[in-house]
Picture 1 (cartoon, rainbow, N blue to C red):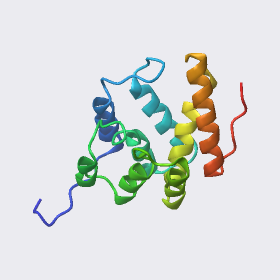
Picture 2: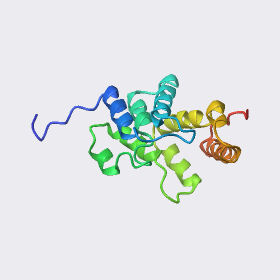
Picture 3: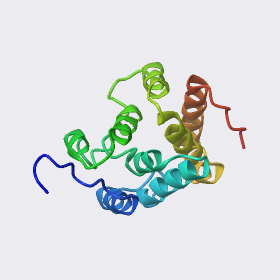
Picture 4: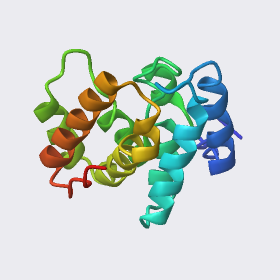
Length: 158
């Protein structure tokens, strides 16, 4: 391969392994391995009819936000431009108002499906049940508000 030839894109298997490795030391708010969340979001995207770019973005959706991988890594990674755009769209920026975040997601083709799957897993009653009351109440309201901003059907309260 010469410098002018494009690098082969990472496969979904390689992206999954990379994401699992990048988040290996992390746990979610309930103390579960973070990779379980990534898997659930990727499976949710697949179940909702998402394509390979969206599934790849699902595996990587929190990587930049959580500093598991750098934005520089993402720019240089052997991923489609669409996957990169979706990851950046769903990456919250410090101090960013929820409306601006939602507007960026809605403006990026393919990002809404990834965020919908992320919210579905985050708002899962079984996951929320593992949290203390104050955290559960705060997050339930946060997820309800984001559903509203994105024009998604708000899940029913348990």
